[in-house]
Image 1 (tube, rainbow, N blue to C red):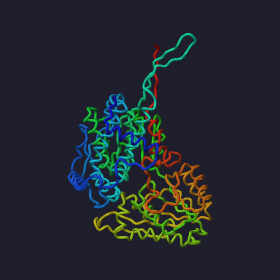
Image 2: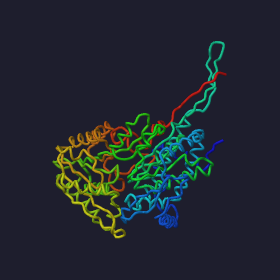
Image 3: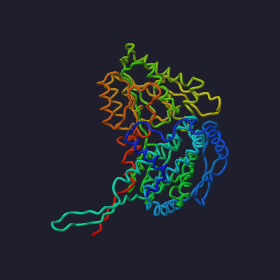
Length: 551
């Protein structure tokens, strides 16, 4: 008998179908209206009631201290929320004990509990949105969608993939082999054995969207999980951990199957956790330097998403106005603080062709700069699109790049009527030559765009390919009306394992990856060694072991 409730089984089966079909599917609608008229007010109330208090919703006993350093990029005031901290050895011991229980539970029962957890999280989407907005600087709408429904769909995708893979082979068979007049018989049992304790290392800009795929993939495959959030972005993922623990507790299981490992900037525990011999799995999102350290740790199975240098190749267009409007929004969205945001724009010095005729290089660049500037200056669109800057480090980077190249568009504060103290910056646009590798071969995280003048499209493709191969890329946008050029771009970028989005205009942007359809990060270039979500993403978290018995 299945241990999945009928409603949860339907959710899991629909998710598996969507994974195979790759068509649009969303278990959790992205429209706020789908969650009831009272939900926004209830979420805001819960958020306000949590401010300045201890986060006491976790089933984790006897903390050694309480820490919290989250500051809203909109109000520039501390949230005042503190989280329980624990010694690394305590977290490991509790995770190890819980593992002995969790690994014995069937795939169906694990999936049932985890889907219950997602349904609990759904009821807190608006509180999670407030938490995300006031720790990351995302706009409220983006915070709601990215940390709420989109993140939960990504979690469900990983959960469903793991659930299906765990059921790929039978648990037991009677094996028979004819041997002359006799028949050899063996009883065979196949067990999917989880690897142990998983560590999930979160980032400051997308605290749930980047964290929950690895978390749910680890849990559904029978491993226990320790979630180590960024010290300045804890609240949103703390809610998720709390609701998973609630779902576990309700079914009579040890809540320490998943634990929150909060820390502080002056006493980080990430490296100590990652190096612990009992930690077998590590999911990491963040900078490349520490990502390389994680990938090099002996005895670990790692899943990383690091930095990349994303390119835009402009060869020819139908409608330049539509193209630059789309690209302007892409670079402005959340002030470029996205791993998928485009940075390097390769444009031929001889200009581009369009349906309206030839357009010079200067006019092409001017159209792009004007479109970017127009978003920042728009009193309604600007604040909602650009949001706020999460970190002082990003603000310093914006200021520091002014002197490295010709500035085509100066950055400036983006006025926000609701939050006049918000830490904001419009996009800075710089111009460099194709020979200036030292400038554009690095990821310049934030609202920073580099226009690179090339000899021709062939050189543009060569450089974009080189950047992806050497430094990694998660996205590439290309614009061409020539089928042969499109084929060249696709083949060249595919050789460095980089997906290409061709001729995007309107409401689809290169930054966005659709759950159940798009693979987020390919795992084939230096931007990361894993992808959301393919079978390898879950299969590497457990091992098939077969036992035989003579009968």
